[in-house]
Image (cartoon, rainbow, N blue to C red; front, side, top):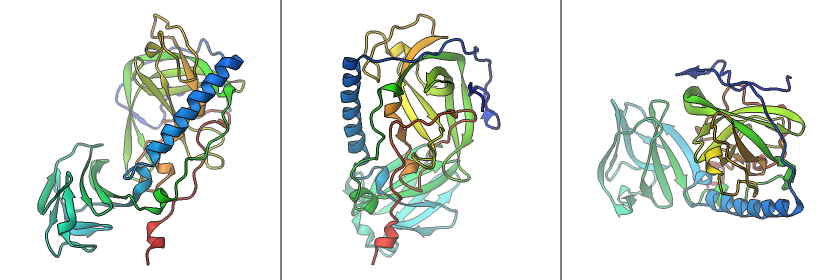
Length: 330
């Protein structure tokens, strides 16, 4: 494999716009002093604790128990009351006595209040509605890939109740690296695959980051805002064994760093030319997508070329196998 990855070539993905990225000119590692390393470790511990709190939310990603595509024929779905229907660009559900296979539909709440009758949804692709609950369950009505679906979340799901934190690689100061951000000028819209077969994912890529990791020169395409946060979705040599199938890392963009500490607890100077500006990437904060914890995610896969030629033994590891709630039911 070549030492230099050109993530800018989107290959089989569909780019809605195009342009030429500058060639790689700089990439350098970031040595940390003992004090900086300890400060970065403390910041990482805080991030890890917040990550655990986020994943432990009652109706978060670990609470998902089912995924159902809705059809034009009014029908029941798994794990939630009502009769569901798709008609044109809307989806609807009717809650009346006798429409539930689980419990009396009078237990349904909408926005926290008891509800009966019909609810109509008109969503755009990528949108979700979380207004419906019944008992410990919440129905996420969503549009993905141009189709309506319902994902049911349950605060008593075994995947959630048994969760004690995402497994992590040990903190590694060498996993904090400096690099350069190279803007595309105009964002590129990439339409690619997701974790769910038949569902496409749209990513808006704004540039490349160039950096050195474990002695290898690397390039990754990123999404986000150079004045806020940038995100790289990538493969590396630990995937499927030590880590999930793919992961992501988020870090401050070049215009967010002036006068502020970076993700690694170090500071960088802002380059006045956004076409080539310094960033700091802390791969200790690499984390899993929801699809690593549940089979019901529609998370985007990395774009073609976003593969690192190294093993990134930093951040979150491969989580425990998903617990099927149906296997725990009597």
